[in-house]
Image 1 (cartoon, protein in one colour):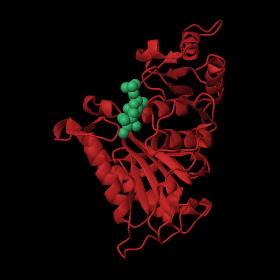
Image 2: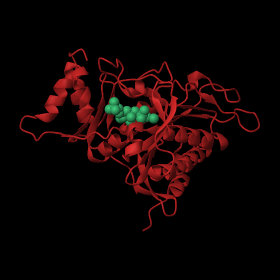
Image 3: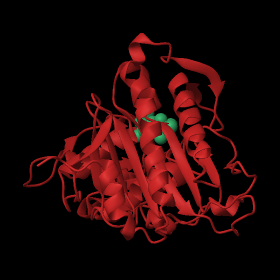
Image 4: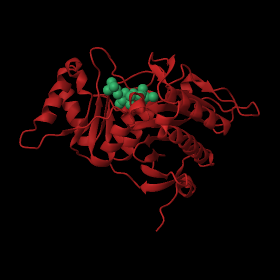
Length: 334
Ligand SMILES: O=P(O)(O)OC[C@H]1O[C@](O)(COP(=O)(O)O)[C@@H](O)[C@@H]1O
Ligand SMILES: [Mg+2]
Ligand SMILES: [Mg+2]
C-alpha cells in the first residue's frame, strides 16, 4: 500500500485544525517547499559555495554560517510571499518582521518563529542539521501590524510546531496538537511520505545527550546525574550520544527513548538554547509524543517569555528520565 504523502495528510487532517480555514494547511505546505529548497543546498554543501562563514555575526554574537543566512532568507521569503503569515521572527534576525500582504493589509492570523538552521557547528563537517518552527495565532487584532506580544506567547499556545532534519534522509516532523507525525522526503520525486505515523516517545530510555565538555561548569545536581548515568547500580549504564544538533539529538531520542540536556553553566546562567524557536517547539512535540520538557523546575510550555532571544536551561525527552533529572536537581540549588 503506497504511503500517504504529506499533501494528502494535510488535506485529510485539516478538519483537526482548531481554526480550519486552510491557512494553516497552506502554511505547512509553504514550510515543506522552503525545506526542499534548503535540503537541496545542504545535500551538496561540499561542492558549492555554501560552506563556511558569512563574515557576519547574528544578534546572539555568533558567527553566521553562509547556510544560516541562506536558510533564513529562504524561509522568510517563502512564508512571506505566500501571504499566509502576518509576522515572522528568526534566530538570525534581531527583531521580528511584520509581514504585509500585497494589498497592504495584515489580515493573516498566524505568526511563525524559526531557527532556520539548527546545529550550525555541524554544517561544514557533513553531520546532520535541521530547521525548527513554531506557529501561533496572533493576539493583536487582525488588520493591524503585529506586535512583540504576538511572539512572546507561552509555548502551550502553539497551534503547531515541528522541525526538518537534514540527515541520512530528510524528514519533516510536526504536530498540530493531535499527535506527532514524521514524513520522509523521496528526493527523486521531491515528495514527503508518511513514514512515521503517530510517533510515541518511550517513557523510559537508555540514551543521554549532553555536552560533557562543560562538566566542570555544571551544577552538582547535573554532575551527580551524569555519574548516575555512567554507573547505574544493578543496571547497565546509559549510553552517551551527542551530535551537537538539537534537532538530530532530539529526533533520535524521540524514536529510541532518551533525554537531551543543556543545563545552565557558570558561564551561561540560562544555558544556551533559545526558548521561543528551539525549546518551545521541541517541548510541544515531546509532550505530544508522550514525553516531557522542563527547565529543571518548570514545564517549558508554561514559561512566560519576556524577550525574543531569551535562553533557558533545557531537559527534554523520555518522561521518567526528565523526572529523574529534576529529582537530582532538587535541593542541589541547581
Ligand atoms: O556546541 P554546544 O555548546 O554543545 O551546543 C550545541 C547546541 O547548540 C546548537 O547548535 C544551537 O543551535 P544553532 O546551531 O541553531 O545556534 C544546538 O543545535 C545544539 O544542540
Ligand atoms: Mg538551534
Ligand atoms: Mg540556528
